[in-house]
Length: 166
Image (tube, rainbow, N blue to C red; front, side, top):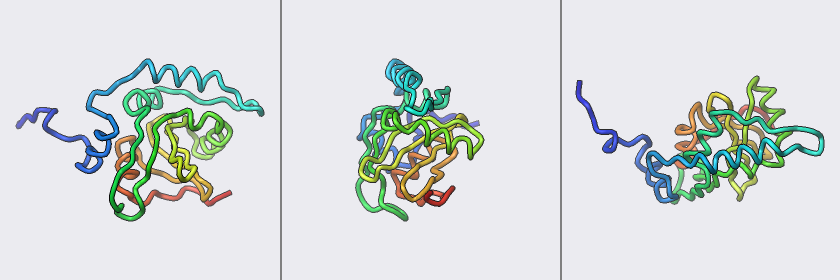
């Protein structure tokens, strides 16, 4: 069995890895204090109509590893323009109802992950770490892991439409 040193292999495709690293990500990045701050802030927030945020391990893990990164991939995307996005769940602070509604439709819970500020797109993650984008045109599936979703956003791969705009 050939053993490769983990430091020499790349978890992400090269352009994705490069975009993440230029945003400040490194393998092993883990800011649990910041993730717990976000978890507490979201847990304490109640919308005017009484909606609350779901907070669960998959979200906290994604925030600990990728939270705070501002990613601005350059160049043309494969199918669509690569997204400029900010991985900060507080972009979704006032979207508890929207996330609860989509979570109910998908039979899961959703937590905010970040946003594409330029397009007012909200990024969300579910309890099994699948990632979604919500915008004025509908709800979109970005991947069944955070790694897949980051790859799709950075490389400009078409997401899968879940619903038409309401």
